[in-house]
Structure formats: C-alpha cells, structure tokens
Amino acid sequence: MIEIRELNKTFRLKSGDVEAVRDVSLTIDDGVIYGVIGSSGAGKSTLVRCLNLLETPDSGSIQIEGVGEIVFRNGKPYLNGKGMSAREQNNMRRGIGMIFQHFNLLDRCTVFENVAYPLQHTGRSRKQIEQRVSELLALVGLEDKTDVYPSQLSGGQKQRVAIARALAAEPRILLSDEATSALDPEATEAILSLLQAVNRQLGVTIVLITHEMAVIKSIADRVAVMENGRVVEEGTVYDVFADPQKEITRKFVSTSSLLGKLDKLLEENAELVRVKPGEMLVRLMFQKDCVGEHLLTTAARKYGFDLNIILANSEYLHGNPVGGMAGIISGERENVDKGLAFLRQNHVSAEVIRDGGTDAAAHAESVSVS
Image (cartoon, rainbow, N blue to C red; front, side, top):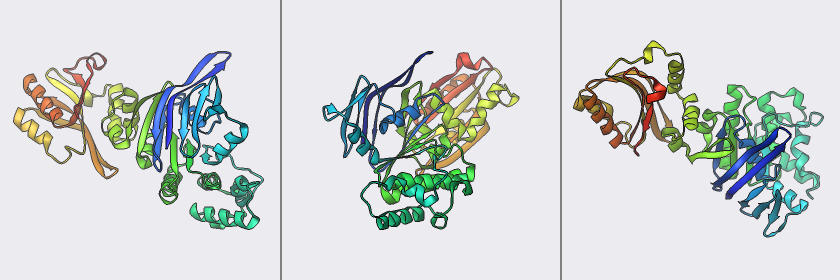
C-alpha cells in the first residue's frame, strides 16, 4: 500500500514559484492499477516522481509498505524519524520501477543489455541474469529480439523493452509516466494489455499517469483527477466516469464518449442543439442501478413530455453498464420538472444545458442524486 499525506512540492524559478503539487493525499492499495489524470501542468508527473524521490517533496509524507514512512521537512526526506541516506533512497528505488513516454533506452546496447542493466552490481551471477532477462523478454513478447538494438525496433517494441527493464529488479510498484503518449492506437492498446497482464500475473501495483481518459477507462481500477496541483476528484473508474462531479472531470470523460461531441455542437451553436421557448436541452447519465429499467419511457408517458434524442452512448466498465444521452425535452414546464425529478429520484444524473433558448453559460445547472 502507498499512503500519501498532505504532499507539497514547489519549484522556485526566476519567473516565480510554481506550486506543482498542493496538499495531495491519496491511498493506493496493493495490486491495483491506479490512474492519475490531468492536463499538461496539472502536477501529475511531479507527483509520480515524488513517489520514487526523483523529485523531493517540500513537506508531507509517503508511506510505502516494506519501506516505512518517509516524512519531508524543508525539502529533506526522513525515514522513521532519521535523515534518509543516499543508500536508503537507492534501496527504496529498487522496489519501484518506472517507464517513460520516450522509453529512455541505451541506444548502444542490445535489448538483452538494456534489460540486464539494472541487475548489474546486484550480486547475481551471469547465469541468473540471463535467466531473469529471458523470463522478462518472454513476458513482454520479445524473445526473438535479444541481440537487436533499439534503432531496429518499433515504438511499441521499445516500450516493451522499457517495461521489461523496469521489472528486472522485481519491483512491487511500477510507475508509468505517459507511457503510451508517443504510440499509435494499435501499439497503445497492446502496451495497455501488457501492463494489465503484468499487474495480474506479477501482482505489481501500477500507478498510471496520463492525460487520456480512454487509457484510464481501459485498465485502471481507481483514478485521481488533478488540476492546478490538487486532486479535485477521486474514486473508482466506474463511479468517476458514470457521475463526474467536477467540470474538469466531465471534460475528460467527454473525450472518451460519443457524448463528447455535444460540447463541440454547443461551441458551434449548431442548429441541432438550439432550443425554443418551452424546450430544454438536457444530458442524462444512466448508472448500473437504473440501466435497463425503462425509466425514460416511463417518465415520458407518466408526465406527458417528449424527448428528441440528439446523441446517445452506452458501454460496460468493469462489468457494469453505463450510458447517457443528450436530447431536447418539450412539454408543459410543470410536467417536465416532475419528470426530471422522477428520473433523479431513480438515480439518473441530469444536467440542464440550455433552457428555453437562453444563454447556456448563465443558466446551466447540474443536479445528481445517487
């Protein structure tokens, strides 16, 4: 388990101070894939680099099972009440592997030599190193690339080598900092599947840093959303995706859903999303408790309103259904209000985007009952 408490990191620059990580507290259970998502500059990469002390936090604490509690005071680490030596820091890092966006392979070394590199000076014999490297290359599907150089590999293959190297010293934690950002969609899917296999077969805890909600949705168990150095939302991937609470989270969710096209239509003030007096443009999100319950049909019949569906999306996350739609509701206001109240009482999240053709920014509201 990793427990982060009130972690802070500020960079002192000539142009001014940059608070990269601000009062972050998180608990990451053993054996999970934990996603951290945020836009560029949100602080997610700085946070993950604090976990293996590539960046030293100014204050706060990190507790890692098998290591102990590391407390930071004035930018210095203290382990179990004593100043943390360079040797202790290196020992801690051996239990934490890390992969990067641009692979960071040694160009003049073969695939075998790259993977074997972390095993140097560890007391292992040549035979033990060869056996370990062979195991890892089999795991990542590169058994036939032992004597090949990085320049001869594709981007996806290079990242596989990087993953094998990061696992060489048998870490219990693997940090992935935008590991798929430089890959094409096919290679991205393959690397995510590999990370999922590593997690399941080896029991390695993976902390996954990304700016893409589709990556989080694909393999993560839980997710923290960062903005301006702070964690603004946290929960299971299903809960965060099905019922996002913050505007930044809703933006990320929309990028991996067909409903994301609604924002583009609103920006363009497309005719499809224009409403007349007596109409409402709404976004409805259905969660596992209400999917398949015919609630929309029931509400429309019971309260006498019409719904013209503009966009709709449904899928399964972690074995549970989640869906949503955007449409224009018309009817008598009292009946429409009662109908929406009925939906909310039955765990449908409803967001009124436009009301009677008025300005969306002035009249947008969001109501969710769970």
